[in-house]
Image (tube, rainbow, N blue to C red; front, side):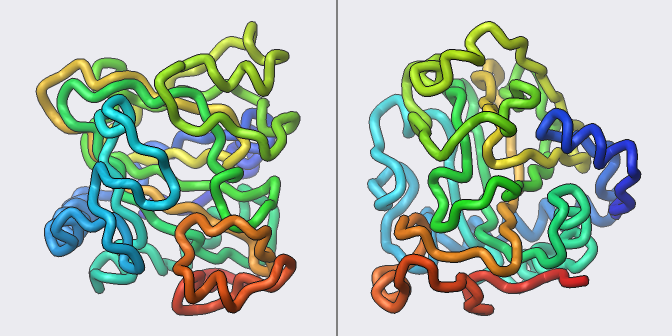
Length: 271
């Protein structure tokens, strides 16, 4: 894996809130990742999360489903908890160090992994933020997004509005039908220029969870598959939002408690 992060890359990320890393995986690693993710998805049988019975397209307690949203993408979360190959991939210390270097923290914990699949003719992913969905509130939280197919202008590559993470808050319209709903919350960014980031299969991008981002429609008859993982700093605390947590986990947490359960949020890197 190409896990060396240069000072120039850190500077770019901390300025714009996203970063493209070319050739993240070599050919053998890429084949292993794609095979592992494909296997893990098949094992799930459409079930979105290990702790809930909801399947793709059903209300999972996180997203309110509509005919439009169902056709944005398929999501399967925490595949690392149900497939040993994906676990091997996600718990790699080298990726945790990359996240720590970009975010500027000393310890990296997994929040959740997530396979994201845009099927043929899928709807656009409207402008949104990630961190407001999550059960902790930290302005440094970020995600890796690894392309398992070429992500192109035609099939729905990611777009970012650079620098927005410095001034967004934890308000969020979610992913809905209206592409511009984010500007009801952040009208100051309506005239900002967006940047498209096509990603070759095997390359990856990182983005801050408070960077405004979205994706285009899939205008092709093929898939646009990606494997992603969201990271939080060691020491992050519960903010009262359930998100991916089970009822049993939430019942044991009070606002301000550390999210340090190794079975749910493993520490994958520490200085």
